[in-house]
Length: 152
Image (cartoon, rainbow, N blue to C red):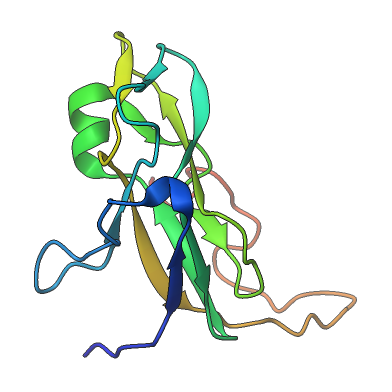
């Protein structure tokens, strides 16, 4: 079951001519984000380097929602390019431009051209926690077993 939420979106002047984010299939979870770099001036991402790529988009999320900026699997599989702070979070009270922090883990430079699909944005509901200080926590079978403790 899915539901829709209304999100106000504004395209900044340097995004003129680019389409708004869109779902690419009927059951896609993410809207594709496009690079708003200047026409004819691609951003070249050298191996091991990262860059903040503009999208020319601002959004107004309703309270209780966030936008998650996630990698595109095709860019990662084919070129080793992914979102560095994955998932990046856009909070409901943020009104600035959405930027995508990409990193090139591949062996070759990667050109990011205007209008290229660089990431996907997933709208998600947020549950806020009320933290309750306690002296001890309830016991579980796992206890304090950490990394790799459940894979034996």
